[in-house]
Length: 242
Image (cartoon, rainbow, N blue to C red):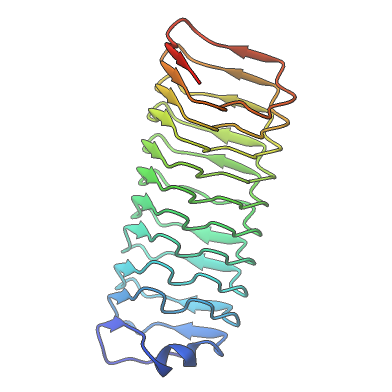
């Protein structure tokens, strides 16, 4: 177990190295934050207990923790920090609390064992590459609260077959669903105005897509490599293609 007299779980020098042999860690009840990269590459870490007093978890905090299989984000935390769980190759589930409003860039990128994750209605933005290359992710349902999805957020999610998006999203940014080779059908919300570059590039199983009348611009290579695409409906509202 980890013990500390400070208000923050900071790490420097030998203190960080000592964590790398631990399989279970309990953060002290009086801690308020966990510093950037504290447990990065702790490859033996299987379980960590974080108290509700923790309000901030730094970026790269658990990146490369290849033995970590599950994680619960405390109810006091408002953000899943950028790169926080990057390359946690055995992470199968992550419980995102209803206090979280932002999932940072590449937060769960390369979590290749992550098959499902629930995004609560408190989340308003999903950063670039947040779930990129999560090759076991089967489906994604985004709540109405989500207004922004960053570029390549779901790039390379090779098992992703179903995506549900709310009418609060105004843009499908560059490469957002690129190389999602199991995606067969996408319903673009009526709120979307822009379909970015490479948005669906390499979606080889995509057979049908309806572009709503809200869309005014479709970027270059948006549907490149969609070799199964049999039908695309493009409305008169679209002023620019490629």
